[in-house]
Image 1 (cartoon, rainbow, N blue to C red):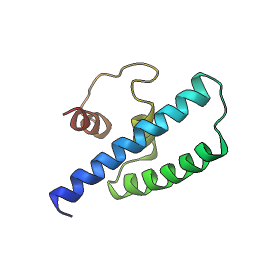
Image 2: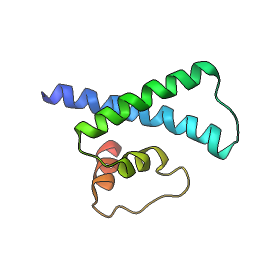
Image 3: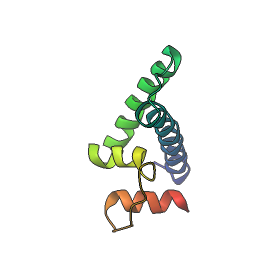
Image 4: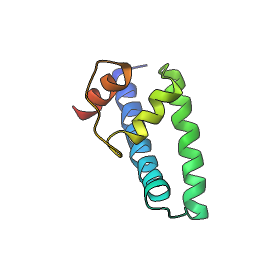
Length: 91
């Protein structure tokens, strides 16, 4: 993979995380249901997100943490893979 491709992949993951976080907030925190269109989009994004996370050798826990980070409470940076990814995405 070239640097350009890695950058594009990182941007795509960030986009998926942002949209999935919005869906999670709507369903979990606000108690609202997703429309049929949003549900199809969510399923598609989750499939691609899980595939990309697998390629990056992230655990399911780390991938879920990416979606829920800062939604419920901020987490300190400890140096684990999740915190490193979070720090890189903030740059």
